[in-house]
Length: 310
Image (cartoon, rainbow, N blue to C red):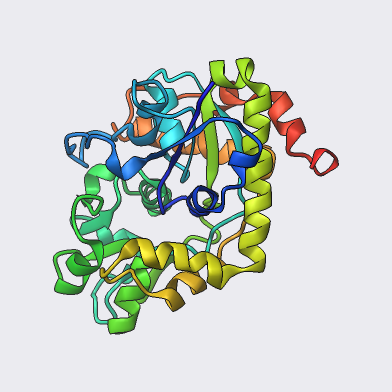
């Protein structure tokens, strides 16, 4: 069979794996699906809905069998009855981004965000970070004016004053920092672990264990190469960005050096965070229902990722 693997720059591990030819040595037929080339979903109102994003294409023609994303998309998929399972998680990516304001902003605490325009890539880990921060300040999603920076230029909107606050991520946050100072309103560290994670359909995991094992082993080999060769890995991202503001080799190298690589078993701490996110997303009207992420765990996959099995 042909195994279809989704990739895009936001999941650094899969993006590098796409360029290394490692998985092709383990699987006879691989097709890479660039998420950026898939038909765009219609924009959604960030005040009332959460896009299902990457979980959709696990179950639609022309999609993929395996994908890696940030924290929020699998929770969204589970709440929309997508029968997906977790494959593994990265270490914490707390240095990847944070909630920022301009140095002279009158916003001093998260509680001051009431009624303010806050930029997030809606449906990504940024939505979860903002919800966790709002809950800690006694606010809800309806207390702010969310702006979806997945369809707006986040750095431009923040720099121009269109946004009062922004959940920025590197390397885009680095573009803003290079232009001038920013003030951190809340760090990711201490709020949640913000790992990368990888998931697949339950039927693929159960019926194609050898193929899934080959993907996992290839990711582990590729991630080890990235850790040993961050500048060489950064070239893939800088070249892909072309002539845009993100085509900065030094900035990409810095981003890769600050991120954890390697796949780890799904932990109880991670599942607790996923459960909290699912509860908050549903309570704030961003999901149709709350879900238990433990339903998406297959014990044999965790065994595959234990140190003894590596």
